[in-house]
Image (cartoon, rainbow, N blue to C red):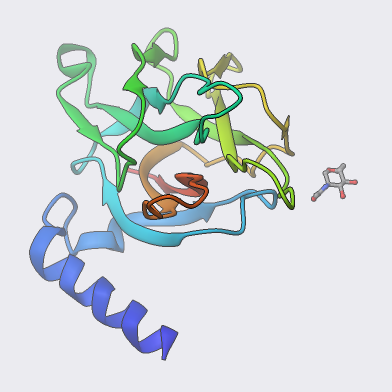
Length: 198
Ligand SMILES: *[C@@H]1O[C@H](CO)[C@@H](O)[C@H](O)[C@H]1NC(C)=O
């Protein structure tokens, strides 16, 4: 059942939106993941930088702390800023699905034309009962070795780094929990990125 729905969604995505890279998702060579993502939510659609573009920067959407009575969700979105050469530093932004809470940060950039190649996710482990937030922040490593840490929340811990992309990140897919009304919300739980070679 789940397989069938997933396949249909992928087909729909390729028909509707897969014009960024030739043949939709066929331009990627590898998926990089981490093992500490949160348990809630569903994988949204993937989004890819245009052909020949790589991600050289990112920004995140973060909800500020909601206080003792409030329902914290922390990380609500991740954007990749795609670069296609010096003249085109920030012409394309991809984000998969994002949550409704919080505000987007200013982008952080890899230096000297380097690309994002690996990531680590800060995740709050599930608490019962409790105000769960799941993913709180993300860190990236650039191809020149620089590490960039987002201005996220501080609940939970950073997990192990993903494997690195051979050249650079060129797309992402977010796992996000839909709004649950009066029940506890967590927004972004996990993310995977796509590597491209050209
Ligand atoms: C994280 O990396 C360490 C060292 O490679 C390894 O021992 C550990 O099992 C990893 N943790 C997870 C959750 O994969």
